[in-house]
Image 1 (spheres, rainbow, N blue to C red):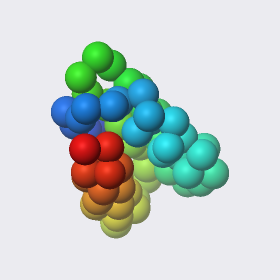
Image 2: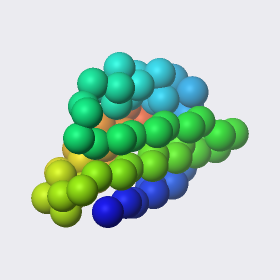
Image 3: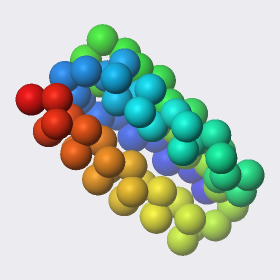
Length: 71
């Protein structure tokens, strides 16, 4: 299973750096985070659909919160 999220934000590099420590910890879920000029790309790969759903929800909430803090 895989999903790619492309989320527009004001400070993509700051958001990426905030999320990276958590992304590198899990062995069952592979997460790659990339900062572009106006957005962050989160690539998620896992074997279980429930993990995929949980990670998507978690990262959407975290990115929303980080983006709002940057305003």
